Length: 218
Image (cartoon, rainbow, N blue to C red; front, side, top):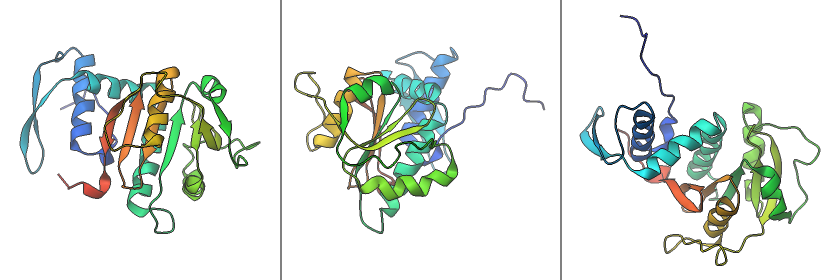
């Protein structure tokens, strides 16, 4: 049997079943197979369940399509840092992807930029250890829509209150900054908490959330 007419969807398998289902739902919505508010049934090797098509899933899929390969690589690094830490210790950091001209306007360097004058791309597998090494720096990694790493240790000059940004109770300044920078620009942000939770922000909201330390195989 040939595969003509079969749509193939590349998925970042490490992000957990709930997020995977959101991406699948968004993909099917884009293909006209299902509509917002409808229910899809899914089957894994261990379970059967249902998933309602919601607005956040559509946003999540848009993120992966717009920054093809880049978001997956950032999530891969964030998830590995969540599990492994840096030198065995938990780390927290922010990655800001896209709309770099505006992001740079709304940020400033707080430590010497280790990526200055270097043309390094996050899609290069050899760069991963370098990213992990600098994950201890305060501030954010700034990454272009093509994957070039412009800076690390960048402070985000944003005022969440003036932007009317709200986040779930218990999250701190890192998450407020991530939400605010994605509201004032067209960028997306990926945060890693010391607790191990990885979150993706778009338009000032959390659109994907996953803690690989708490995950179970499915």
